[in-house]
Length: 323
Image (cartoon, rainbow, N blue to C red; front, side, top):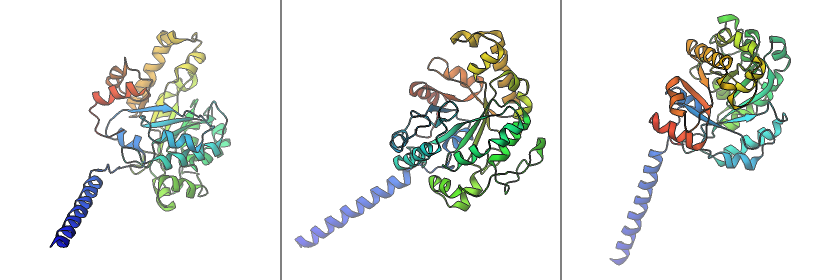
């Protein structure tokens, strides 16, 4: 009798353990996208980013550490630091090792500032190899700096797309993609999908509703400002920023914290914000603890923010997704 009771007690404990595990699994977040930033933007939730601590000298260890960041995405700088693809690759592997995120995503979103200036179409096409190498590491987006010209923007989108995707082709001069097959296996491994699935999903969102890449423009000088509306009409662009530092230089406004209050700067910002709204693109602007709610009300949906500012913004928009 004692043995039977002992067996029943052990069986009950085991069943309770299984039930507990099942409950935990049932409550675990189930991401709708590989790219967490896309999932949030699709719900009109603002996204908050941080800069990569290690810049382009990324390490596996730093990736492990950053995998649990408070931020929705990591802006990885390769514009003003050495173009170190190996470092970026190790960093991405570290993010996978340290994941998943609390939201259930394999890694935080990573968007790279690539040192290719969009001064004209020829400049972008000549440097498209940089996009190929960065994308092969498994990042989730790319930002084109000094996006001055619609031809440059078209070349940027085409360089990142596979020719198998046809959404938007023929609109405003956009031609088929030019990205090749090599490098897809390493990117797919970071995303945790097959190579075939990666090729299906590695396309700009929201142009492609199933896409997992976020492509943005830095409209950060007087040339880009003049073409802001035309640039943002190119299919495949998801967001844009006005780059106040370089914009001030280009407009001849004295640098410093007060530069944003210059009438020329205010006009530049409002012009780019209006162009984003008119073309249904997301606008990027810095958000702080003192202005994050005002920024959201104005229409800002992307921006660098501290953990404290992000917390204020998330509470204001009643965000449900964990971070």
